[in-house]
Amino acid sequence: MKRKIFALTMIMLMVVSILSLSACSVQNRPGPVEPTPTPNTTPNTMPNTNQADEDVAKSKQLADRISTMEEINSATVVVTGSKAWVGVDLQANAGTEVTEEVKTKITQMVKNQANNIRTVYVTADADTVSRLRNVARDTTAGKPISGFMDELNKITNRIMPSVQ
Image (cartoon, rainbow, N blue to C red; front, side):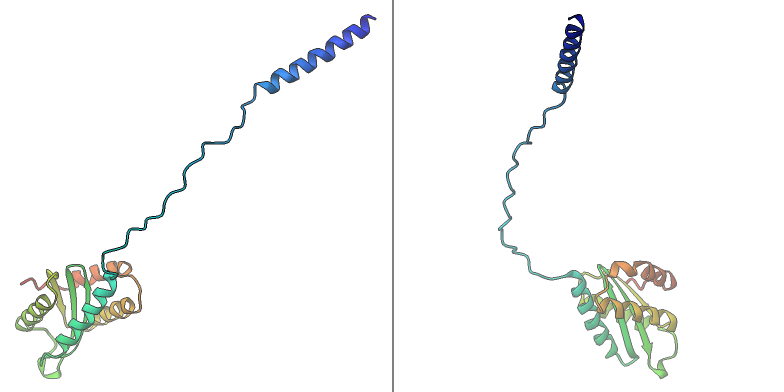
């Protein structure tokens, strides 16, 4: 009989311990219900323009305009923000270097056509013009100008700004 009581006591003790240990666990409750955000239905009153597209269009327009100068055979322009880089291929009779007079004409032409441009870099160096052409070609193809800032900084270091 003592064995039965001892076995029954042990079983009850085990059941009570299991129940008490399982009662100490954290109860899983569903979290608070968050309201779904309402979509913004305010119409966009700003014109749908892309600054990079505007800069590319402005670059093309300025290059066409500069190319009409009698000293210039062709021009490449890259515009970003308030800066413009101008690479020119001079006419055969104009020599190999851009004169201060031609730099001044180009600078004034760029600033008159694009009021936001404050600094104009002008070069006729063949290597620098080639690098500018590559940047202009890639930005026209849709690549972001931010990917070319290192290249433009190197070009800037090669030429002095024609600040008028």
